Length: 139
Image 1 (cartoon, rainbow, N blue to C red):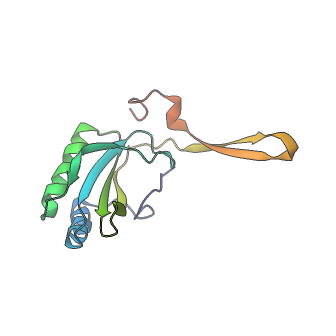
Image 2: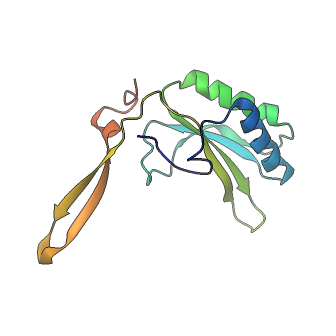
């Protein structure tokens, strides 16, 4: 199963040149970029680990692609995403976010159904990756 989060989720994996083109677009719009990683891509897990600080002063996409590749080397079996922030509205807003790396195998999710009082039914998403301890989910 393929995790689909962020922009370009339904497209094939982007090459480094395609990532650089998206970064150039973000930088041309004045959006600083940051790199994040996680081994828990649950849709409600919006707090991924940040790789360094956001790159506010970069004007060249090569610097961002370099940081993406360094994060790839450090975490080869994690999800890595790139974010671009737009601060024009007086607050930091995510303008662009997409996954630039995935583990080779993605175990997927299951839906747990629970029947409660008054014939109510609740559903929960359970990622199979959570069956393994943190840091070893995609090894």
